[in-house]
Image (tube, helix red, strand yellow):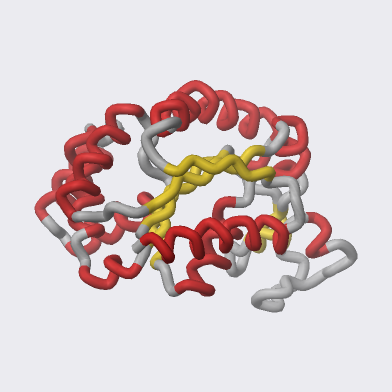
Length: 219
């Protein structure tokens, strides 16, 4: 069983992935994390990826899908996993479908987190990170606080460059240009669910849990 999460930066994918992962024991797979893991382990694909990235080039699809294959072949993922950050293009989605067929991952759903663009810009621009532990907080979480609620560091909050409004708008444009066509690709091919990411966290979690529970009945 699998879930594929799509959503613009700040739409709530990471928050919900952690909640669902904790509730069902699904592994949350971030493509950035497994790429770094492959490089650290020095796998053949990891070494090749490191060479390409070190030269400042983007990884070709065959390298990326190979690294995904390495990860998805791990036995603990048979019980379920959440894929976040992949696929990013239609060609990657086609390759992933083929891989799922080879590995017999037959039951799954694609979740698309929808949030109004201006609301996203406001949400992200108000985020702050801790210089000491790197955790990210909404403005509401740290309002009137002088110390980090995670590590206790004093006066450590700052705005990351990624959360500057001009950078946010560029990231949203990239998402709209490259990722939304992938969502259209999945329409009609698999269970596709649109979720309003502006709803309260517990409401969104309940919606996703209902989807997972329905999938579990079909396994």
